[in-house]
Amino acid sequence: MNSDDLVVDTSNGPIRGIATESIDVWKGIAYARPPVGELRWRHAVEPEYHADVVPADTFGPVCPQPVMQVVELAAGTRQEEDCLYLNVATPRGAAASDAQLPVMVWIHGGAYLCGAGSQPMYNPVSLITTGNSAGAPTVVVTVNYRMGAFGFTDLSAWSTVDQTYEANCGMSDVLAALAWVNRNIAGFGGDPSNVTLFGESAGGGIITTLLTMPGADGLIHRAIAQSSPATSVYGRERAEKYAELMLAPMPQDRVRPGMLRSVPVGALVAGSQRAFLDVPRDFPGTIAHTPVIDGDLIPDDPLRVYDSDGALPVPLLIGTNRHETSLFKWMSSPLMPVKSEHVDAMFAHIGTEQPELPLPEPDHLDDSYQHVKTRVRSMAISRDIGFRMPALWIAEAHHRQAPVHLYRFDWATPLLRFIGFGAAHATELPYVWGNPASTKRDPMYRLGGRQTGDEVCRRVQRRWLNFAASGDPRVGDGSDDVVWEPYTDDRHASLRIGANDTASVGLDDALLQAWGEEVLSFQ
Image 1 (cartoon, rainbow, N blue to C red):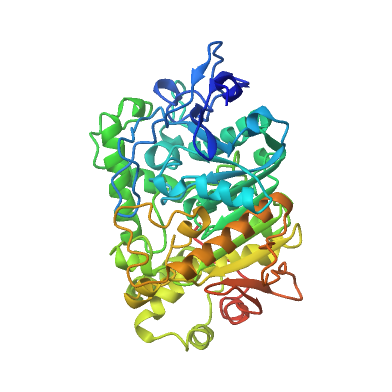
Image 2 (cartoon, rainbow, N blue to C red):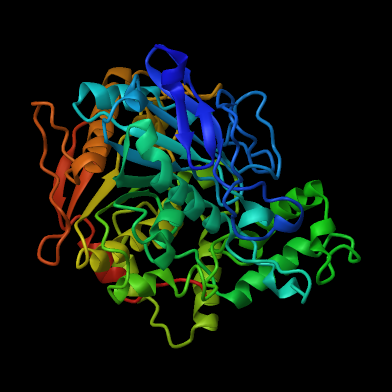
């Protein structure tokens, strides 16, 4: 291929990608100006124009972040505040054609604190190759955004007349990335009118929040939310309290109103990590860094927007994993309340904060969880209030606006079942991306199961790709394709993804009855 075929003239100037054996890639594309100096804690600003051809052959820096046990960055990854970069991968030759391919934009997870679009897990080769063989060739975009203190801490209360600190900088970054895709993706062979946003954990939370934000209108045409902590969006009062906790250990002359831009990056990373650990320990069921209801980018509580039929009418594929919270027990992480005393404290906290809110009846919860062993019952309750019920509450409301496909990911390798890990949080990622051995410590198939795992991967990838292409999450390869019905009032349909896919109706009806219609969340 001629190298000129890999030069794309974007709205911010020409860039040259690289051709690999199976895909074309453009790495480290700036979609916003570096958020440094006076742009720290300001919403993303469109990048300046460059007339010369810029090589796009190296991943850009990622947001500064603490080291996390389960988030493995690529060797040599740079961490800098100048981190607003995205990557585009296409089937070979797509940019030189008028292909108008479906576009999938990935928003990574990591508790709004860590991770990157360039993590080895998110290598797009397998997904694009599967798309080609399935007759659904697709353009894949991965995005870096600001996190922790830089992107998901509301410091607006420390603003002065001369120094303004805006909330939801990380959310503004994702909006800016989507706007860049809308302006430029046609030059890579993508269709700007067929963009599917997909993401997991915090990335899923960003997606379920974006669908309630007026600024996202027209930028998203379908959405896939994997294990979204959709109710972890707080009001200004709680956000300010958690910001105070993050800043408390820092030198007080640096954290006075109007002075925060002088705080060193390292101190902000350390403060983010302390808050990440301390907040859920002191306030079980909450996390330190989240989107904030600011009345601007995020005008109202997202679950309230869904319930009032105010979300963008975008087809949605949403679901969770069967054993979400076992990851947090394995990590000994306070991020999710997995012990009974922590679950009790969480309910007490919600009840004190919102005395008018009807909490689930203990007898109803006991009936719903009677099949769960006592030693893991608290983990199941935490899983459901944190992940499953938010997905169900959204499905119950959003299907009035657009088709909703609900899933539960049940597959776990023999080893993961043996050690009691099961289908834990994030264990679906290797099957979405087709990269089961993307980390050095990956134990996935030490006790076998690879052949079944490969089949699970094939089905998941094809379903995700076909949903992005047409809104129909079928396997579509002539095999025994289990029909995945949309969720409706009359039929609470879902798909259980396991060694074999199983269509279900009413899988979660007992949960819906036990937890009730009132959304439980922190204000």
